[in-house]
Length: 116
Length: 110
Image (tube, rainbow over all chains, first blue to last red; front, side, top):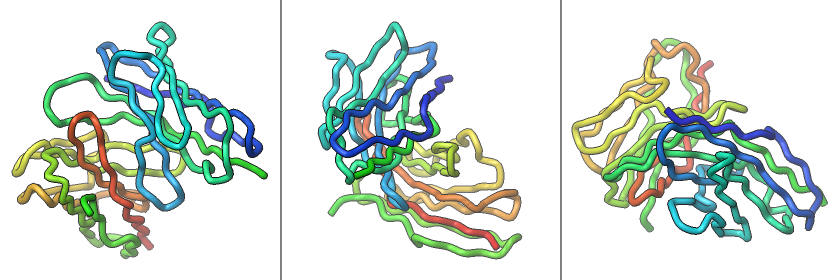
C-alpha cells in the first residue's frame, strides 16, 4: 500500500514570495506522483506529474516539483506566488501498472494562502 | 466540451434517507472513481470501476453502493447505513496516468 504525508496543513505567504509545499510518500513498489490544486467548492485540477525521466517536473501556472527517490519526496515549488494561487494543494501517488486504472492515494492537503 | 458532470452541486437530505449522486463523463474513459472529501482529511476512495458492469470497493465503501451499467455513467448511492454522510463527493475518470475530476457534490444531511 502507498501513503502520502503533506508536512504542512497551512502555508501563508506574501504575494511575490517563493513557496515550497512539502510532500513525502511511502511505497514498497514504484510509483507515479502527482500534484493537484483545488479552488473552493471546485473539483481537482492536475498541476503536474512525475512518471519517469527527469526528476524536475514543470507544470501549469509556473509550478514545478522535484522527485527525490532517496528521500521519497516530491516537493512543489513556485518562485513567485500570486493572490490567485490561494487554494488547497494535494499530493497524490499511484503504483505503476498497466491499463487505465490509476487509484490515487492522496495526502491531506496543504492550504496555501497568499496575502497582499 | 468533454468532461465530467456531477449533479446536483448541492444536496440536502434527512437522516435515514438514501440519496443518489450522479456522475456522467463523455471522455470515453474506462475507469471511473468516487472519492469522499472531508476537511483536513484529503480524498478517500469509496468505489472504483474499470469497466462496465464491474466495480470494486475502495477504502471506505461501507454505507455506499454504486452501479456501472453504461460506460458514461457511475452513480453513487449514499445509504442510510452510512453513519456520517455529510461531505463533499468527487467523481473522477482516468486514462494514460491522468485523472480528471468533476466539480463535486456537497451533501448535507440534516
